[in-house]
Image (cartoon, rainbow, N blue to C red; front, side, top):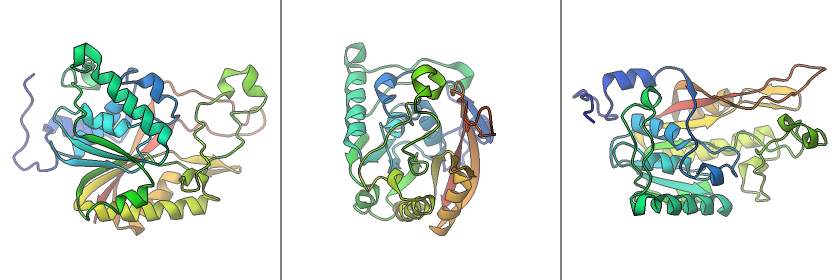
Length: 300
């Protein structure tokens, strides 16, 4: 398919002016199909659609540049890099070996499709223009370990773009989505249950303030490895804990500023079909937080 021309002054990406303009819309609604090992990846309750991640990667990078995800989970960012229109390299860091194993199995299974040619993602028309997508994961690598420790192995300014989806806030051992009612009512159940016993897991922070402080440390290391003037995107959901709404997106943006970033934008993402739960019913208002923030940060 013939691609529209790229402006000669565009050194950030390889997009046309029309595609650039469409990306900057501050509200995104998506309904991507289940693909690229979606069934096993669902074991991780916060896995991100590879097409969403490829959309971010294709805006903030050019071909062959390096993308880093320090909280890689089951590899949505790496899979996104693998389906970009032009190849990107990607490095994922993941603390939990369960998620590393799932990513590796998804890649193996995908490469076995079509007699070894790998899958071809369907043309979705206006929601993902440009025709079908190929799958080329050879430049993508997942490593197990602590995000800060692993990032310290990287040279300063060696990364072109960071896209990540960190733990949103400290895990709650008891939530309104569990208990006895979950046995009888489907909308009381949740698969967002990724609790580990590892003290290095940010989700095991002892308090919200501790979580923010630890995230600031991570963001400081992200800033070091990211080239000056380049971008990071942080996907984060606000929280409702201890009877209070937490503006986690705004709080993390503030910590990112302290770590050396400039906040450039906040893209609101809504994934159609998100399940609603009867929090607070019938006594008090508790919001169903169905949107997520994609914080856009620039190094320097």
